Length: 146
Picture 1 (cartoon, one colour):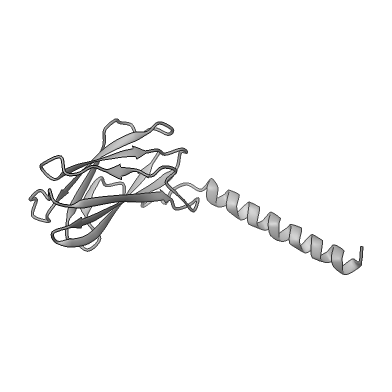
Picture 2 (cartoon, rainbow, N blue to C red):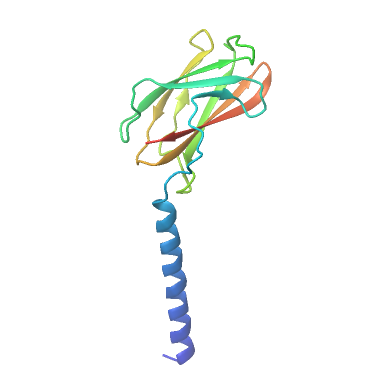
């Protein structure tokens, strides 16, 4: 084996080791201190007011869970003719949700049920609720810490 091949191999190992250390640091980082944990907020463009409520408290790591989502107009009128989508993940880990949660049709009074959420590890999660309703498309992101 030539000297250059050995040097290239050592350099590659150092790069892999540095990447592993960086990933481990991100994996074990605490959530930001100023994380907004509100469960009711205006959507990103202000078209709706969105509230989330887990059906069981506290939110647990592991089992499938359901959330009730309430969507209203900014002045508080229920939005019963919207379609909701659900996405999310762990920002510090760089992965999405381990399941594909689905939103039900309207339950009345602006309420929808999201089923099939699983949080398979503790830490900081972001739950993204997409709303396609009479006022247009918008999204509300919620931070959760398990």
